[in-house]
Length: 206
Image (cartoon, rainbow, N blue to C red; front, side, top):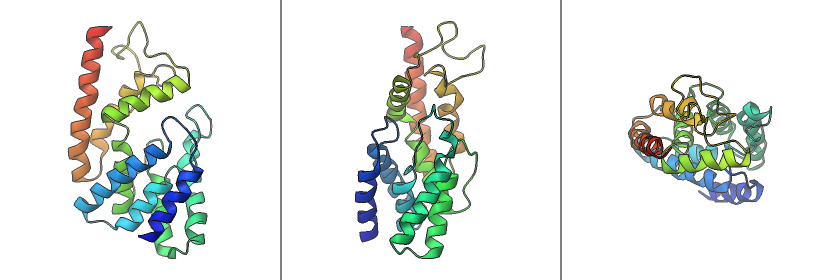
C-alpha cells in the first residue's frame, strides 16, 4: 500500500485549514472507509485512494462554486493518479466515486467503492463530530446559532445558509436513510441518535 502512503503525504501538504474539510476530516473519512471496506468486501486500495482525494478541491460553502467541489476534485484526482501510474480502470473508478460522493449532487454512486466513499463521508457529517463541524462552519461563515422565532423549523422551511441549527433539518437528519451499505446504515443509526439527543437537550436550554 505504498501508493496510499504517498497519497496521504501529498494530500496533507495540499489541504488548507478549512474548519470542516481539513486534513483531520480526510483522515476520519479514510478511517470510516477502511472499516466499511472490511465489512463490505470492497477494493481497499481504490476506496482509500478516493477517500484521500475526495476533497482535494474544496470551495467554502458560501462560495458559488461550492457545488462544483466534487467535480473539480475528481478532475484533480485524475491528474494526480495518472502521474502516480495508477491503472486506467482504477483511475476511472476512483474519480467516479469522488465526483458522485457529494450530497449536493444527489447521485448514488455506481460502484461499491463509490457507495462506500459516499457513506464514509456522510458518517463524518453526523454524530458528535458532525455537531462540531456544523458549528465550526457556521462560525467561520458568521451565521447565528438559530432562528429565535422558530429554532427547530416547526413552521418554516430550513435555511442553513442563514442559521446553523437549520443544517440538522436540511441535511443531517436525512443522512441515515440515504446510506448505501448495511454497515454504514448501522453506524448512521447510532450517530443519528446523538444528533437527536443533542436537539432534545438544546430544546430544554433555549
